[in-house]
Length: 509
Image 1: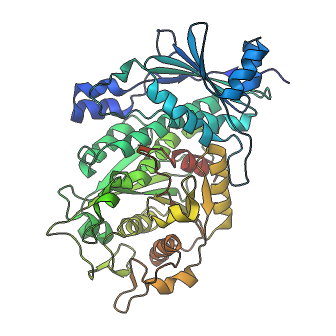
Image 2 (image 1 turned 30 degrees about the vertical axis):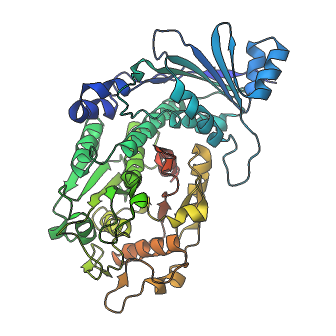
Image 3 (image 1 turned 60 degrees about the horizontal axis):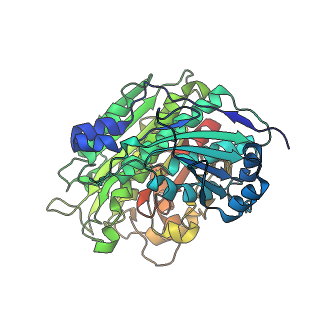
């Protein structure tokens, strides 16, 4: 066995997490205490840790280098539980090595699932030891640890301001990590927790107005980033966004962020569905199906988190062309101004749509965002991400998002990015020529939802988006649609899904 290599990452003290601003402005001083720091190799607090965790596929081998008692090591690895050693609580979790071709080899799913309840119980500080086999395992394992540490809490009896987690990573192969790579990991980890925080916020605190303020604050200190807010959706012809959001007291809008590249050329655009709440409109969801609809902005949170990560790690980007983030922000509510079934609207693509389901609203706002990415920003590669269809969870389960693309190259890169980061994806059927008939309208260019049950609803939604992109004049095949409806949450918590997937994918283009 080669000697383990350990490395450290330190957070820049100048970075100010969005929750400090948001809590102080909207929620009062009490929730300021809810944040807790995570450092990799650094020191989250001067107080000594009261809990140590060893987790990973190489956990037994790293324990052998730190503890000489073979019987002790064999027992705790076999039991995967907590014991007290030298008056300190020690938890050991040995991660399985069984991995199919659709999974990430380091099994970050097990890391997050095992660490989440441990972090939830944490009262003081913790040393977290991530034990991996190879260099390729470092990124997904570190990000899995971040995903296990959401920070938003409204519990008045808690004071988790005393929490702090120090992370150490040991690589069995002896491979090393560059400072640039370490910095990128810390940036991605921060962005994942930011996306989790946004998804976990309740809709009475996070609406199109407050979301816009948070975005503005988050990008205010980023160099070479411009922000445009488009609120005049109706006169601009963005009727999908206008129709969906016009019944809310908080105006719908399109937020456009641009990271200016150092080289001229057509850019890359990430488009995120950002429905701060979705009641279903007049196709009203039942009470149980409305629960969790605060997470319908998960695509926007992922897009924003990825964009911030790319902006902060700009020097490491492969494409030095402009990178755009388009956030289609609205609330789908009921009221006198709400759009109705049987309405016909003309979207920004120029195509007309007959509404036959007001709960199929995400594709309307996304279609406007996609058309804008091509017509106004001249993006050469366009990626959209959305909590779009419940059918995606049936097709791909709760661990993979569903992806659709006319480009096998782009789909292959997305799959590779998912395995590299732990944000898993699965390529589903994309045949517009076969599915288009199911959204045919006798009076408009198309309907917004399928008329025949069981005809691949997620693929049908992708076809709708694609037809509006083509209708706007897009002639390339460099488009990817990510349906993350099934992976936006794990139980009652946001996962931060999509941040690492998108950032890594854009870096690979």
